[in-house]
Length: 203
Image 1 (cartoon, rainbow, N blue to C red):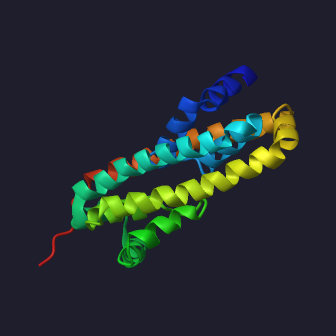
Image 2: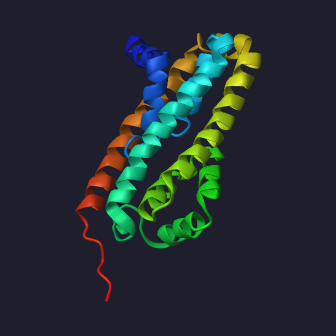
């Protein structure tokens, strides 16, 4: 079992795996709070001299994943938003999207469990300028991942790398993988059910 968990972790602790984790993290289905941050920190701690590269790769993957969510929102349109975001949360999301792309993208600096995906969906559905939105989002992601990677590179060589060899780390990785599997299944079910709903028609 230990070998299985660490084979999965080992894949994501690579440049390609980092990009994939970032894409999944910004998608509508995959669920793993702080997953991308966890991977960025571990990789920067292992190879401090490449912290800047991990920052850029995580940002590129995150923006690519958000672009898919933005496109889904643009395809669904404003009336179709109710299939994915409902009730009081939808009104709350719309109110903030109306403040502009920079304000919405700035919310990406807030770590999970803050629900950022509904804002990306609404930005696409409400016709926000994609160039402005994704430029601002990229800037915020570079700042967030850059700070994490720089701190891990500076302080993590002795602390984090040593911790990676302990049973506690194995337990944390196991919990993360279990959470990702369960959360992703639940998110997929909710998304499928929501996609089958017909948006309410107005008079």
